[in-house]
Image (cartoon, rainbow, N blue to C red; front, side):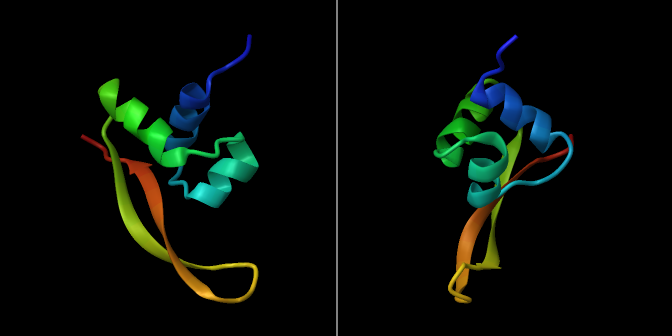
Length: 71
């Protein structure tokens, strides 16, 4: 059975945080923030924080990292 982007994302978030590049490479999700919004609308407690990463040019960048907040 084929899973949706939201289903794949929720399964990932139950195990670990995710950032946009990980979502694109591992889950095929290009609009991560939109899928996180969808999960929030479904009642899941998705939270974000800003983290610093290094891009492919060796430059420091800030991106959103999403996770599930435990209740």
